Image (cartoon, rainbow, N blue to C red):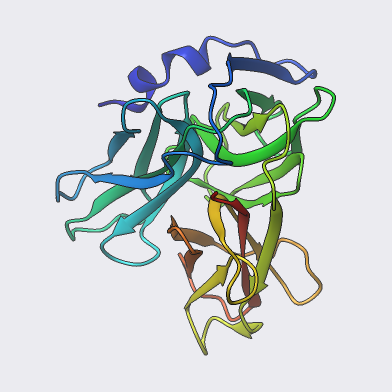
Length: 293
């Protein structure tokens, strides 16, 4: 499906200096457990060498709490340029980089699902000025906390990458970079936060980082982070990642996310160089966790 067609809703929004906000709210359901009917589900696209997307739906009676996506194929050749949560579904889309690849590949999309006591809503904001500004989405109703994240690059067509999706307890920070030598068209970054009216018990954000090395030593890096210490009954709700250099800032190099996978106990991530250039960088992965019951 052409990029312009699948993103009609986003592209009709005027680019203004103010950030636009969209919210969707779902009422709470009665239950005695913290996250009843917790489940992690996924679906996988066809195996072809072309841009493609996939979506997955939560089991009946549950809602989306968190997201994830994975490219199954050549590393560093495909940009995961959107992972979008709705109340009951998560959709993801992969676009080949400017260099492209002749190899076949698939995209897999993940949804963390459940039926929590808390009412949930999805908040999104769009960064103007071609997506170059850092963007924060906050769960700003009194007492709200964040369960999961998502993002969308609109109009980038594989020539921009998301550098980070950094979750906190009630907000998410995001940023994207144009990686092509060609002139940048009009493109934007939209970030999503899945918010709950109250924090589920045990809600916390964990993170872990790879070793900081140049790409000539290790052109792709993978890392995982679990929920708490051994014996904890926490499960993964949401995910996040960050590509950083030796001083904790976004490096001026072409690095794209290969996967960000939620399981019940941990989040797994891998990123790879699009064009190796000898710079130092590391990958940080985040897991938003809470008690299941």
